[in-house]
Image (cartoon, rainbow, N blue to C red; front, side, top):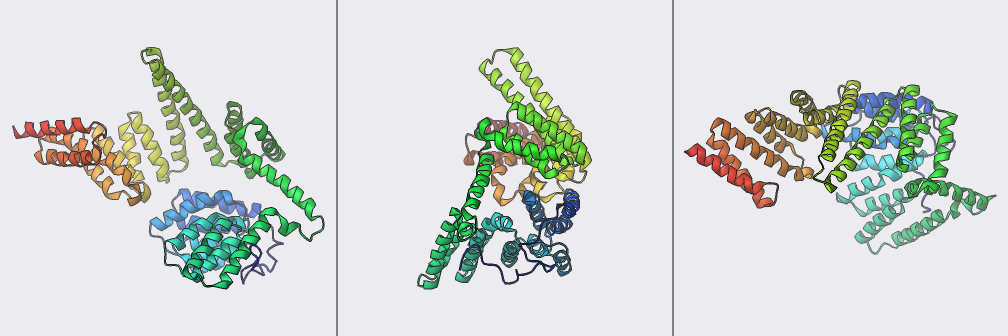
Length: 493
């Protein structure tokens, strides 16, 4: 086998009968699908959003920048018990654009993320229809899926071959090693592993394209120039001289077509990575201009995030100054004013985003957090109550809602919310439980004081003891233990 060249069995034709090497992306046809997908995702219509994303990818397979949004949507679909893709929808997507088979296979897997068979079929179709970056991006996830299951030698060999074709050499060699562990006597596998190592050396050296082709080594020089461009962008933070070349190219592309959202996004990314004051000011201007030109709200949010970042930096500077001169009251006042300005700015930004995306629970959660910090507890409670409808936010939203009830003196309700939060914490987020238990303990202590409730006080003592056994240095747990003993003594008379 010659890794990086083999095609899947059904890869000879696209849905339109064209050879996969001749088909071209069509961003104009894809963009409306992506825009509608983003709206559907914000409305928590996860299955529908995935279908729209896949429809767009059937026309334009270059939008790897969307992969995190797509995966987030797929994970939410899975976590809410979403079902697999209907056959009719898979066929519909397959027949849409020139990358239909790739997009349909991707859609099928996204609707059933734990299905290894669908994951492998996605990789095959991605490699068949000129979508190798997608296969490479997801190779690690698919490799881990095999690690977590009882994968046969045949399964590991297939993973090795697919990762090799995706030019993900490290994973290909690891998969090959797994296969060899299961059958050390397989001479054909040894040969294939040697071929894999050779293919890696050939591809990384550029010889597979240069050898035997007219102007081959001139092409290698051009590719080296392209690689230099990529390396310049990857090391952009290294200094102004390195940044100059990719920034200049990005500015030229943007100035040539300010309504090209890809050109805008590229320039904004590079400016943010440079990170100095001039670059960030330019990024803000470009983002706001792009919002006016394209009406894409993501650019408005980008500009807002830059403002928030600048305000956070001012707070850090004020805090450092205040710590260095702790007796200076003026510096303390300046820090307080900077912190207040930051919260007000976040309030303005997050309120606008909630108004734009009224069904997005995450944005409601963020807004609630700011309202609570500003002492607007009743308004914060409404946001946290709405955020609890999102499964992945439920525990944190219930915890914060409990803090709101506690601040209002509603200790019974606070305790109920803290209990609910603890019952909904994911196994992967157990580090949150100590904070939740501490706040539950405080609610029980205050409730016991207010209601003269011995049962609440005794439960607070039990939780206090549990926290102390876990971490005796946690916050003021020693003082709290003495306090709860005093409360029990007072109630008992």
